[in-house]
Image (tube, rainbow, N blue to C red; front, top):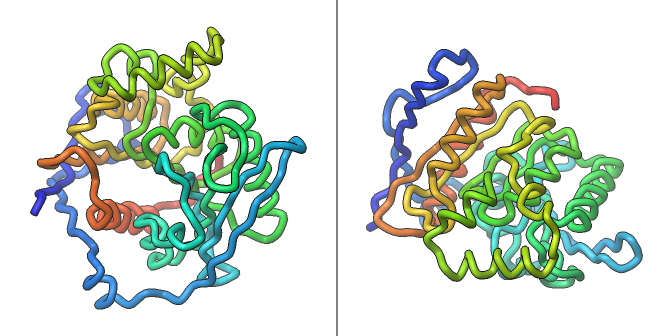
Length: 290
């Protein structure tokens, strides 16, 4: 079995910042398997979905996993390159664990995925605008929007969306914080080639700057949890450490989980186990305003 654990992050440069929260001990991640789900008992939920059209042509596909109308809502941006379907969306490990922890979940497919239209251009303006309007629409319908969660490439859109809507908290896993540094230091040649192609295709000098949240994080929710795979070849974990230090120095309530493993990916049962720890921690935190 792969060995997973959360390691303590020590950032001496910001140790004097009062609102920087770190663990004093290593914390193990216990996988939540199918048998563990059966033992805990799964909360009954209703699944729904649809497609909303914005700007006449941009279609955004969404799914909802609802356990109760008065529950807080977690927005999950599709973390995968492949589209999530009605059959699989609510079984995503983060969505499944969020339901157990008492959240309704709103899942949004990226442009170009499933029944969504438009090119998947790594969090461009149209994608962010459409996602914001969908979230605003759901809020007017009575959704109690509380948090936003994304990982991998979905982090680019999540950061931009989080600055345009008053989420209480933001969770980012394996995020891209400084795209310029990512393009320079990434050890994944396929990933780099695709980003280079996108930058060339859009031919915009602002491509890197618009997608580098490390340069301007003003307007993000004041409570942020980050997690990063120590063996991530696409984006170095040092980026996450540096971003945490910047947030803490600017009086954000921030925690960083560095996940150390014998493998490169984060298998579903372990991802769900980590989600459990994060969501339980968020339950004990004091609500913050945007």
